[in-house]
Image (tube, rainbow, N blue to C red):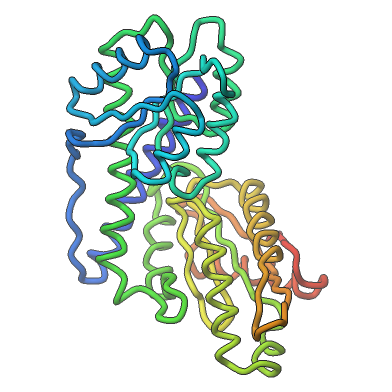
Length: 342
C-alpha cells in the first residue's frame, strides 16, 4: 500500500511541476503546449524472465496494448539490450533461476540509460519480502502470479504514460525555455526563471508540502581564477553545474544565481530531507576529479545554505535570503559543509 501511495504521490508531483512550469512560461510571455494524454502504442518494453511460458504470457498481454516487447532470459542479456535500445518499461520476474533479480534491479537503477525507466516486478505469493526489497531498490510497481491480464495491462499503461509525461516534461521544457531562461555558461536556469518559478511554488495553495531552497557557493573560486585564469574558472563552474544537475530529482530545479553561486529549488520537501539532499550534493562535488591544466588535479568543494518553508508563508526573496544567511554561516564554519537557516 505504501509503495503504491508513494508512486501516486510522485506522479502527482510530476504533473504539478508541469502545471507550475507552464504558468511560469506563460507569465514570461512564452508559449506552452498543454499536456495531453499520450498514447502508449509503439512503446518498447523489455521482459526479463527465464521461464518461457511466463515470459510469453506477458509478451502477449503487452501486444494487446500494441507495446513492442523484447525478451531477455538472463541478467547479461538484459544489460546488453538496455545498453542498445531505449526501453519505456522493464518487466522483471523475481523468479530468475540462474541470476539474482534484485541485483539486476539495483544495477538498472544505477545506470544512466535505465535510471528513470519504470520497473515493474512480477512476484510469486511467497516472495513478498523480495518484493519489498525490490521497492527499496527503486521498483515502481508489481503484479502477483497468477496474473490477471487486465491488471497487468492497466499497470503497464500507467507506468508507460508516466514515463512519457516525464520525457515530455524534459523535452518541452528544454525547447521552450532554453534561450530566454538559461545561463549561457552552464546551461542551467538563470535568475529570471528562478524568481518566477519560486513565485509559483510559494503561492498560497500552490502545492502540498514544503518548499526548500539550497544556496550553493563554490569555495575559493577567486583562487582558481587567479591561479589558472578565467577560462579555468568557467570550466570549474561547468563541472559543478553538471554535478548538481545529475544529482537532483526530475522535478527539482537548478539555477545559476550569479557568479559562483547556484540555487536548487526542491518542491514538496521538508527541511530535514533538504539537508540530506544538500549533503549528497556537497559530497558529489567533493568527489569530482577536476584538472584545470594537464597533469594537475585541483579539489573542488561547495558550501551550502538550506532554508525551507510552507507555500503562502513567505516570499521568494525571503526564502532565498534565509538560505543565503545559512550559506554564509557555512562559509564562516570552515567551508565544504551544509548549514540550515534558523
